[in-house]
Length: 479
Image 1 (cartoon, rainbow, N blue to C red):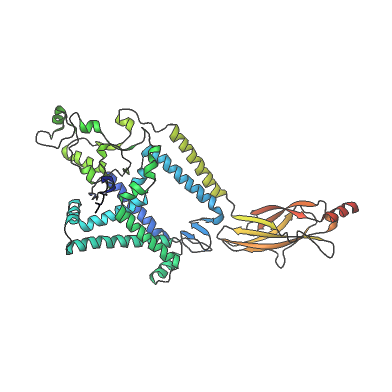
Image 2: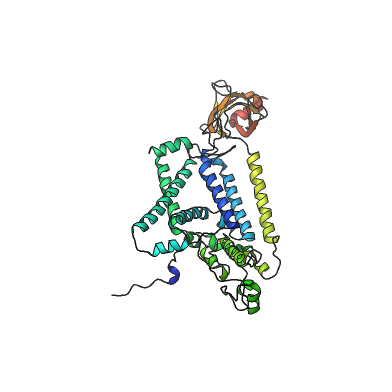
């Protein structure tokens, strides 16, 4: 029998058991986690009064094809603004990466935020790093089954709540949560909750650092945005290694001046920076693509430096130029161009949202037939007027003509048009023109729609009035 080939060492995953750490950057990360979870889980429950639709601050209503974000309502035809928002986010990511590396990954990425919570649960249930390692290496018994089982149960619970919270953004939260709990929710809601539960559990609980290392494309192309001025988490090798390298503290080598005299650096080789790293790298080996710039190693090293009486900053946020004694340049052509483009996109986006029309009017001439000659000789054209009301208020509109002297506008049984809030309506109107008033074969004119409640609000649309060639020639000869 042929032997099964042994996997290459790089293909084997080494289990990582991050150690907890306290410090400045850990407090920042914890604050961001609390804020992010608070916004994510509580925002669907924030009420926001509207004349139409659910009174929910943020709701993505697929059925009505509208997104309500506080006072802004975006419809399917406003997809351009959503695309512009994504473009702005991408440019902002590139801009920040060029200046501060993968700081987004370390503090704001959903994978980081959820993994932080999953690791906190693991730590609370199974204990600190040595206890977790011991538990993993021990044989299966009642205690191990209980701790491992409780950990995975709590992971699944958080993942399940994550899926439910996401689903609540797509319907009225108070009604939808009752439907979910009574198993009466739409099939799509159930599938979404199941999908989010499984993916969150796998990504944040099982895969963890592999998502950042192998699955996320950002880890691979981030280096294209790095340069010698990019601020990253860096180890000061000159100070840490000295001439002879690292050395653990001893009675003779505890004081810093003694270490300097013998050629040893400030790094006491405690390994704390490696133990706290969520991706399991050694920052002392230089910049690595697995580093998410979370800065936990800075907190760990600062704690050790303080305990032995050495200055902090052996591991710190720094650039390659600063480490070499040069000046770090923030304002450079690349960042200036990114900044100007960001400002331009932001101005276009916000100006467009503020200045965009709250009503879209489109007119289509009914071409079957193109025109009709009535019994009294009048020429009649029919038009379909489609009105899209983007506001949360109903509208009553009047319709008039401009540039078509002598024409008669027929709205049928109505003298004004009603359009419900956040909805679209199509109305058919007729225009009649006496032959003696026809001056052109193809006459251009405008429909004018005016909001009855707001006389200053009106919208126009240009169209054409068609007449038969023979009748037009005859009208000209008669004149």
